[in-house]
Image 1 (cartoon, rainbow, N blue to C red):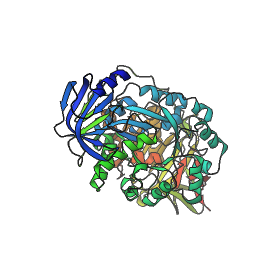
Image 2 (tube, helix red, strand yellow):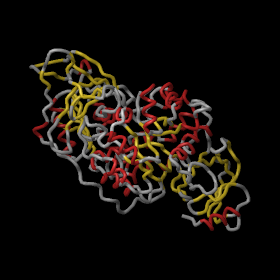
Image 3 (cartoon, helix red, strand yellow):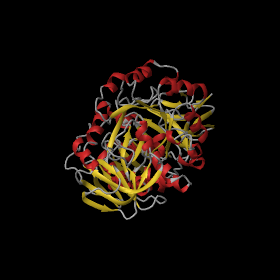
Length: 569
């Protein structure tokens, strides 16, 4: 870090800056205007904004725009299937220089060891990775995770990059004052607490906000976002791989609300990050819908910086961190250059920093699946069954009640009705426990797909048209010590190893993407039309998002917040 006397000397003009960016147009998110002026850098900081400075190096921007580096307000790095160094290689060249991450995916597998691994693996990158302490490990008591983190364990995370308490997904516990939730809130009193309250409104919303959360990223309608803004929450507009909410929320953006809205990607897979981008894509979408570019950029810079108390970044101003993005046009917003801490780290989509020679050792794999537990048979009973209905491009589901298809005294999948079996196999303790259900909306015509990415408990989730294919797919991912696989009968069509927690690979992200493309294409050959059937499947196991989900303990009615039987009496 530049010492303050040197920074002040450069700011006064008494000594040359390290770099002068001249003939540029500075997007000033503090005053929502564009200034035609220079920016000078001293070490990792901005020393001054204005003309007449001298510098050791001058860069002529020829009318290009200078923006603050983008900040992703809420992201699970693990959903990129890459470890933090490779995640950085995907997002930094597109202008994201800071992320606020919730490592609750790996925390649900490895507890504090997993969080500390993510902190260690994030050190020294041109991407600043802040962490929110994972508040719900496990997400609920209706599923089996690999760890349990209470208030005392979370409070022990003393790294300065830990900003506060991550998304409080146990919203019923917060609303009704559950002791374990209140203990966590008390442990983080005075710090940032993120919320997670899908569909909560009215008096229950009043209680949730009164409990302490200060944001929400689960809104799916503009009306929901407006109510939460009125009750004091910040709202993070989300555009994830499988939760596309940005355009639906756009009507909530107004002159009165725009200083309390930020942008987040939450969960994005490698192909989306590499081909479409992250926060940069969201900005282009907003601008294409008619949002003033300067206002849109403020949602991705100043707003999240102020929400999280990151006053050293988020604007192009003296003393702030020199995280800068250079673009030729505010309308198209194609990133040409990225500075991180005063250094040019990427240009025209290419990362300039070398891959580290060594990296922290990840926790030992967690994979305890007895082969004799892989019984997916469902005995026939009278009546109808509860079926999870997957909704395209959303992580919420519907619950439908239908008569099952049966054969030989058992419930079977019926591809003519798009009715498939789904199972969650507990992998952390070796209990052999399997939750069984039915799902529609995945679209397989034959075979099965399985993965150890199963939010948030990250057991093995499998969807299939027949039991043999399901067993083959589960055995494949267990044999990989974590990963994704597609099977047709006894044949494995494609697989992707994810040995870091069953969630990530240390391979280069483009290699991960190529392997992911392979398993997604295999799922498509089996009939699924979805953009990413594996990510869609992974959220069918998340028992804090309405309406019907599944864990190793069985089906969960999320709105009632209780386990329910497959059969409707």
